[in-house]
Length: 287
Image (cartoon, rainbow, N blue to C red):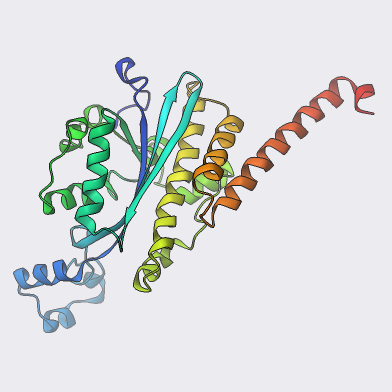
């Protein structure tokens, strides 16, 4: 697989970042149309060996038979002092269907202009369903996202799959694994395997919270990655900016208290470390 290096070209150095996440469910109507095209019957399903059935898209729908139910995107300014969160947008059911969700995103991107999209595993998990949903809705890609039409040309696509950048040749990790290493809040709404249950129960506000939460976690990882390359604010400053953004704009969400506490805890730890340094250098001042 061809993967470009993370540092942007000089001409792109100050383009905004757009961190995004989608949540989806199986669209059984689409899958039924697929089964009809395959002439696949219940008898055929019974005849399959269990080993073969596990990988058969006629039994277990793949991504073309999914429907996007919620999408969040967080826009960040790329300044000389690091990334600064500007606004979070969320669209989803029951207010919008898949086509309306994607239309809102593409309209916003058209207005925003050139930007760099950031996902976690989105090269396989987010971007193909977004593109297919746009096609199904008869939408047109804005000029700023035209590079997504050639996703394998990473240097032109404008999309950064941060999972690929961080993992390199290692096994592809879950975002929660990396977040745990970096001590970043993650998966605060529910277990990942229970999101579909929220959809079944019509808990759409919680589904949107899941998408927003993943955007926030991914943003914190992005800030740490840029700092590693010497192009961003410190981990402490990034945490402070993100926790303040949550407090100011997302305080109504149940995850807000955890992010706010995370920011306060990071600040207390920083003060404690500085106090320890002072005590080591000048013990008489610590008394």
